[in-house]
Length: 369
Image 1 (tube, helix red, strand yellow):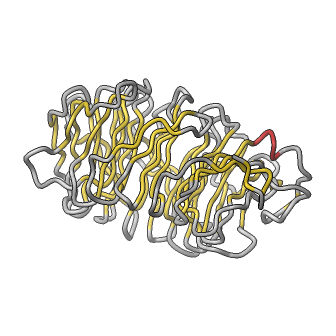
Image 2 (image 1 turned 120 degrees about the horizontal axis):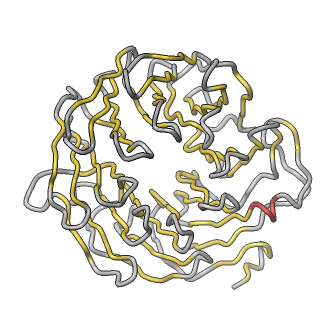
């Protein structure tokens, strides 16, 4: 139905009653899933219409992931097991960690949808599971502190992990054996990601640097020292030419991934804490969310800002582009999920710089409690 206070937004039926902790598109673009502090997972179609509410968890949801074939949805929750559901039947397909004390914090499917990698808040191990039956395949034990993130290489050969032990590691997916250790960061390594060719890895650290490494040899190739505070996340552009980094200094930097030369600095107009930043699937845009309740998008080539996306009333914690790159889904502590359409946003006047208001707001479909 139309929201009288905001004719450009569509308010759908109530769903979550707590802050939204995660929201993801399915790779085929048919579904959106969101998880909440209320321990529920909501499955919607691409227009935002409610399909199903999963209530099998008893604690706040920590992570969600669709399988690359879009047939399964995996979730993890605080002090709870991991679950996967069949997207079509909505039935539980597998249980991860059944009969164990494993508390799954992060999870990711392999590119062929056959495996799931997880890390835990109470362990320095990385676990790899058979996605079809939930059987534990490998436990990778070489880290000496909590594992904070994992990433499969696009070719499915490697699994990377990063840790509070100040290292990242690359593992052989077929055997579970350690391939190489990436050493050089001086503090906690918060994020790890591969380039599109599975040849390089980028890491972000509490030491305020991002570093690019050879996946094959573990050699450090480039050090990016553009930030003055923790780098919470770093990722390659889809074509591998650029690296995006998100920092506690409240800036987003875009650097050449081969030379390390700074190309753009993106700042939120309010200097608010950055919660998320990412490339669109075609690499044309960079989007970010933060504590100022707004979603901002910039042209990655020119640095030009699109109209600010307003409507959330609390921190916007999660953000993801659709596979086509023309829409964004955002989730907030206000309990709502919103869908933003970039072609509508592009109809407005664009401003240079720091995400200033343009002549019209973005259109959003809102899912609010």
